Image 1 (cartoon, helix red, strand yellow):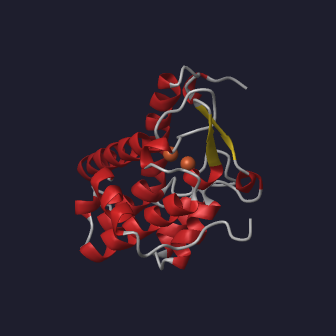
Image 2: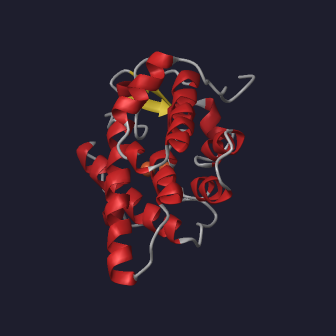
Image 3: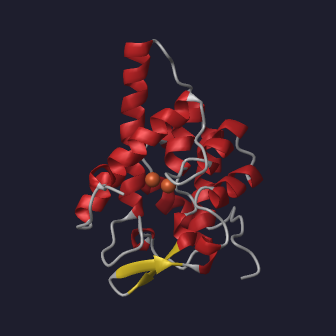
Length: 195
Ligand SMILES: [Fe+2]
Ligand SMILES: [Fe+2]
């Protein structure tokens, strides 16, 4: 592989498909919406997945659609953000929180490829950590530092997580939705796993 990904600002049919899929785009400015769509189009177009529906949440024998996971995380995170505002008096900036939620797993299409009914890791998975590749793309697309750094460090096995409230909200929204995906795949949810 000469390049992990390429930025794709064209592909109008892909842009439309991404717009039709993503929950929460209407919560941010038109300019930010375009940048979010370009990020997902770039990941999809750089991946082995022909259709958005083919993108897996995780490797394994069964596939849970990444499309569904992303929207579950965004919806849960937006709800938690409202809860934090009401109960803690802490307003979260939608221009920071919403992109973090929608884009946290931006690099997953590049990390897994389909094999039969399931999915396996790509070579890139072993070259750079999950989250870091997505953050590289976001930096290249000019996203704010809080978004780049939170995506870079969101993975459960990252050396540390962000201290900002958006990272806190993403963490619980992501684990909540991920455990639904693991249940649907017939795997043990993270909260029930013992080391
Ligand atoms: Fe992730
Ligand atoms: Fe996730």
